[in-house]
Image 1 (cartoon, rainbow, N blue to C red):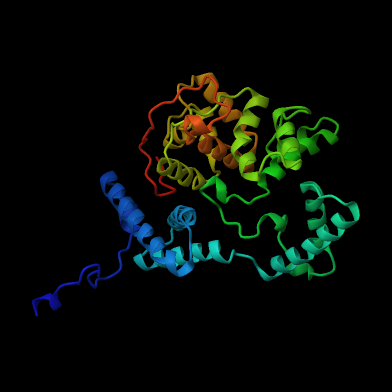
Image 2 (cartoon, rainbow, N blue to C red):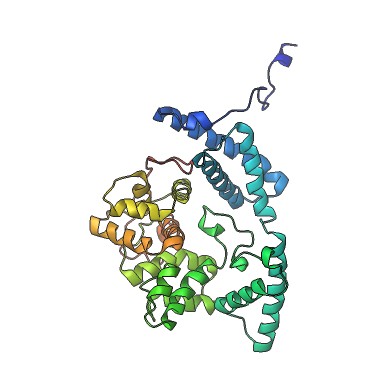
Length: 356
């Protein structure tokens, strides 16, 4: 009966749950890397263990792993402990978002009212409403008499249905490109456009520019939202004469590592931009330029300045560059003159929030 004294096949020995808090805060970089790798493995096991029960697809599993790591990194950065039991709990919460979406009662109610309003308007007009028109209706609903002033839906609630801070570009809310690009056009309605455009993170966008044209194609249905998200960096780059990402430079795992790391920075990619403009060589700066090959310092500064002006939208625009850098040659339609290079593997591990 000796076999009864050993854990069977896939069973794990009964032991106290691992506490990652101390190891990840160690002064020994080797210990930190080891603990980070083990936490990643634990997170992967936790999410994959929930896959069949929650009906997650392959893409959802990968995104849930990244978002779980991000949530754990936030806990560490806030000084909260990360015992082993927390990993499973956070993974369960994150995975449930992919199934149900974190929609509050008032948000769900507002979405229902908004859909009715949109349907009525479109029936009268005989055409689909633009994203700006939908946004205006959403604000009317939010401030309307259907809600207690103390319990109104959040601003731009129509964009946050099922939204959690994503790591994969495909997990960004479906209308984010509409907002980014339409604000560039809205800015032209003011006297000089500067204030509105800067607030939207698209200062410098001009009538007839690439962002303007991309918005027009999107609203005419000539590109899907996913395609527009992928083309977003190219549009901004064309308007501001910025370098294009290098095709084939990033593999999927490295791209996820980079996005997890950058998302966990205090101000996202803007933190990295400021460090570049301060002349610092940090891990964040490395991540910022990972999608590009052979940049000179003026090009790096131009990218950093352009993204820094875009504030809260900067990380999403940078994510488009990360997505483009994952494309092989045959999928990169705008890649004339771009060379394929070997994929890189920088000294950035997958646990979001690791700081240099």
